[in-house]
Length: 206
Image (cartoon, rainbow, N blue to C red; front, top):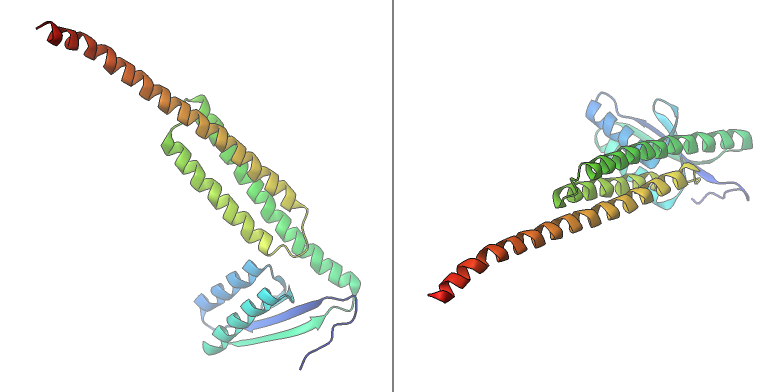
C-alpha cells in the first residue's frame, strides 16, 4: 500500500534494528547506518531521509539482520512537528560539518608535508606518487560525506576549497619534481658527453 505524504512535508524512514547477541552484526549494522547518515533517537532506533538509494540500502540491511535471527522494522513516517524536524535536520547537518572539518584538518597536514618536502628539495617522483595517493583518499572521503549530506551542510564548501588547495599544491610540487629530475638527467648527460670526448679524440688520433 502506498502512503501519501502531506504536501510540504518530507518522508522519513524510521529504522528499528535489534541484532541480539551477534556483536559482529551489531557493529556492521551501526557502520552501515552511520555511513548513510542516520540520526539515532535510541540505541537501536534511527531516522533517515526517505530517498530511493537510502531505502534500498536499509531494506538490504534489514533482510540480512532478519536472516541472521535479528529483528528489523522499517517504517515510513512524517514528522508533524516542524520544530522537531528542524532539530533532526540540524543534527544531521552538524554531523556532516564535523566530518567536513576533519577533512579540512587532514588537508592542512597534507599541505604542511608538501611544504616541508619542497623546502628540503625532496620533490621526487616517489614523493609525488605518495601525495597523489593521499589526495585520492581525500577525494573518496569527501565523496562519501557528500553522499550522506542530504541537507547541504555549509562545511561542504570549506572541504571542497581545502581539497582544491591540495590539488594546486600537488601540481606545483609535481612540476618541481619534473624540473629537478630532468635537470639532473641533463647534467648527467652533459657530464658523460664531456668525459667521452677526449677518449674519442685519442681513438681518432690512432
